[in-house]
Image (cartoon, rainbow, N blue to C red; front, side):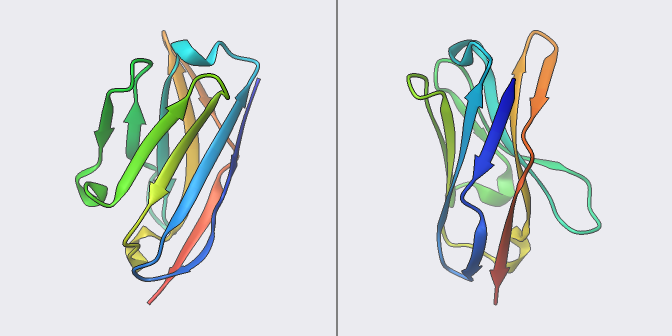
Length: 114
């Protein structure tokens, strides 16, 4: 079982990145998928989630700027991050949940310069 996140990097304020998470070892289409982030000195926090049917939920701080999507055929979940702000700097983690089982990826670092 593995969640492999990628796509992080350095971006300027106002820029964009696309984060991706590839899942293996799970029946992906049944899982609720999500992205969380942990900024330096802060607790891990929800960014966005997407249900098996495609319903989405976003933290207020990213609404209108971030878009979560999933591809059940490829077993991937993506996060398009636009209009980046310095306060978006964090390690972003992919998450999978189903019936009380929670899986985490290794995280990918996003750094936004002002």
